[in-house]
Length: 273
Figure (tube, rainbow, N blue to C red):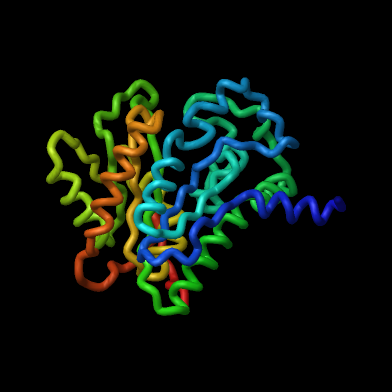
């Protein structure tokens, strides 16, 4: 295999689109679905056990997203490369796009990268992932299909010594057309403490993928964060996936125009055609 062919193969392995022709209005996105690193990266200087931690991926998020997509007949777009290589849910200018420290763990293989090395990471994973989402959404809109974007993530029960009591959080910005009815549906269920813009909010710069592909087009969107001790195995994954599938199957976004779109750093953004 020639060098050019190898690059193309690596790019094609960086993102997976499932059920592209799904009839649901939802497109489900899993930015941090995988802890896989291409062989050329080794383990970035980390012990193998570190690659199972949240620093490398969102444990449990992909099985939940897959079951939701199947239940809703929705399209699923997932990244297939660890966020330690490059974080697909960050803008290209973000300081933690390729983290040298994740949480409190140093990532030796990410230290002192050259511009060429950084661009190679962008070409490997970030660009194919976002190109795939853009193609899916653009095709749907060209066909006149209703489109709503939902990203599925997981979070740690404790972060830097601080406990996080919410089993699920819904993240949204000033356009809450989808988030408000979703939060209301969850709050009607007994025993669920719903985090509203917890444990993160768009101000934490975690909303990039939805900003880039949903908010910039005026599409309803919301981000789901599930605490990862709720979904370590099939029982919890099925519980949350089936609960959310039932809600989304009946959910209608609030009426009204999309709120003005500003990126999470406060800049006004141009809408995509």
